[in-house]
Each structure stands twice: as structure tokens, then as C-alpha cells.
Image 1 (tube, rainbow, N blue to C red):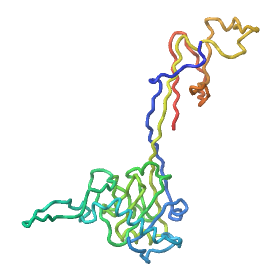
Image 2: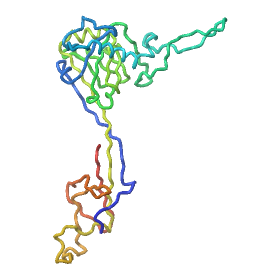
Image 3: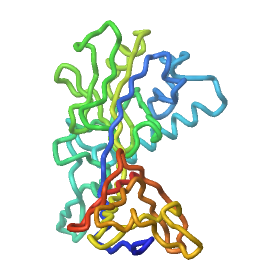
Image 4: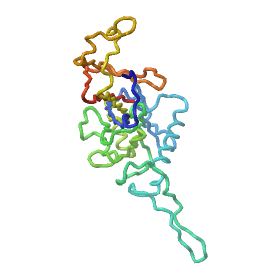
Length: 295
């Protein structure tokens, strides 16, 4: 009888497990929960939009918004700036002139703009004011679930709701009002109409679902038919020599399993699994207990 049993490689299975959680915020909770809403035109702050929802009066906040605006432009729209209708700009093509010189478009379209999929993203970088909603990674996890983001007023109903279409676009009533970068928790509203509607309403709500990948490790604990068939409880031993009491040597005696312990190579206990009810071992067939640990 062995007290410990070594795992084989086939006894340990690691599987990914995706978990989701929904969040919903009232307008007054934007600041309390670090849902940051910035409005900028990339050069300076439009004074028409400065109020307690877009600025706190902290020194350097205007400079931060300008930097944020330029970062958004470079990261997500650099391939589309010279394009039209939300299409990607023309790629560089060489044109050979009669005098031997080469001309052609000089704008590069080889930047990585974090496209959500191959569907037309309809990316138009605004020349005037635009809004940026920044959601912290501690809330959205690995990424925002597509089709889960909504921005609306409490009394506006579905008609007044801006939502993502699952392909990286923010729409309302079939019209595209901006883009969403799921893996970064960034929402860009590029139409002033949307910004005016949001700022004019004092009861704005925002909701989305996060996604986070966990890893589940499954340990397959197999007790062979000839293993662990005697109790290790010291109360079953008699005398100084440690003989089993007669009633525990009968062929009808089978111990029960109540707890599984997982140890490292130094025999240090790392985890304990309790069974819902005692499980009798078998002398005729193997017994398998599965232990699942999420991490």
C-alpha cells in the first residue's frame, strides 16, 4: 500500500476557460468607477464641452487630452487619414516619369491599426471635435465582448442608444458614429451630433460585458484495484507492533475516500479537495477522481 502516488503526464489536462461579466454604469458613476470620457479636437479643448463630465480642472489635463487624441489617431486611424468614406488610403504606387523621376502617393498604409475583423471598419478620423471613452483593463479583462457595449440616456430608449455592431463600429439607427477597439477598451465617437446628444442629457448610462480567459487544470487521480485498500487511520492498529484489528482484515472491509491532497515533489501539501460524500474504494476495478483547479 502506498501513501502517495505520482501523477503521469496524461493525468494532468490544462484547458482554457472563458468567463464573462456584465457592467452597467450611471452617468454620475463615470468618474467614480474610472470610466473616463474625454472630448478633444486634437489641437485644443473645445470650450463648448468643458464641464464637470469632461474636465476636473487638474493642471496638464488639456495636454493629456491632446496627447490622447494624437495617440488614438496614430494607433487606430493612421491607415485611413487620407482615405474617404471610411476607406483605407491608397497604397504607395510608383509612377515613372519621362525624365526618370518617380512620383506617386506618399502616404503609407502599412500601419497596424488593430482591426477587429475583415469587415469594412468605416473608420473616419474627424477633423473637428471627437469623443473618447476609455475603460480600464481591470474592468474589461482581456477584451470587451462584441455586441455588448451600449451608451444611452435613461429616457431615450433603444432609439437613443449608441451600441457596437459586433464588428468594431458604433452605430445608432443604422448610422455609424464611431469605432470601438474591443481589446483596448477604447470607444471613439467621431460625429459631433453624438457628442451633443450625450452632453445635453444628464442621465447617460453605459454598459458592456468583459471577457477574461482562465485556465482550468484537471488532475486525474486514479486508485488502482490493489491500492489504498487499507485505512491509514492509526485507530485501526493494535499493540506496539501496529497490527490491524481483526475486523479490519476481513475481505468485506473497504475504506472510504473523503479527501484528496495534492503535493509537490518535496511532499508539501499544496491543495486539498473534499468529496461531497465518502467514496468506497473497489478491490475489483479502478476508481478515478477528477480534481479541477481554476487559475
